[in-house]
Image (cartoon, rainbow, N blue to C red; front, top):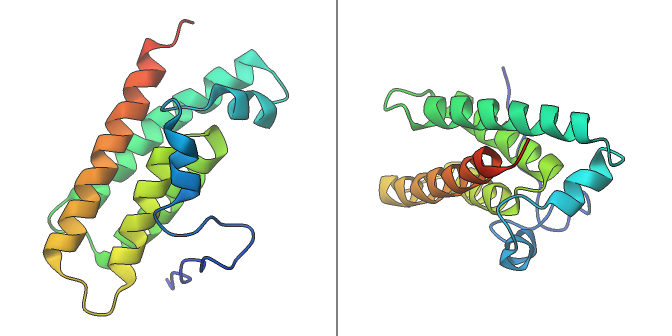
Amino acid sequence: MTVPPAPQSDDATHPPAADIDAARAMGPAIDLAHLARQTFDDPALQEELLGLFDDQSARLLSRTSAEDAPRLQAVADVHMLRGSALAVGAWRVAAAAQALEVAFERENSEKPEIAAALAALAAAVAEARAAIARRPR
């Protein structure tokens, strides 16, 4: 399986690495206005997507964090997590995932750099998952 390279910052469909508009100016962990637009204001669809993101983010982060995770699989998982985060408006998760993608793609990336990016991603995922758990249903 070949993993395509991460988009560069001049790609109009993807935000620049580790930026995502400064994680959408540090708004809430989940941008509910964005999610509402993405779902045409359908509350049931919003709940379904948040539930899927909650489950998927935990699963992908766990696989990526595993000491024996194959690098190509970890890159693919982080890329998938970034896309999911962008879909639901989890801007900090998306920015952290993209920073980890960049760290993975550097030819001679240092383990401390990857570990720091992974820790930032874990913190962003925990924050997003906590916001989902606190949401009234």
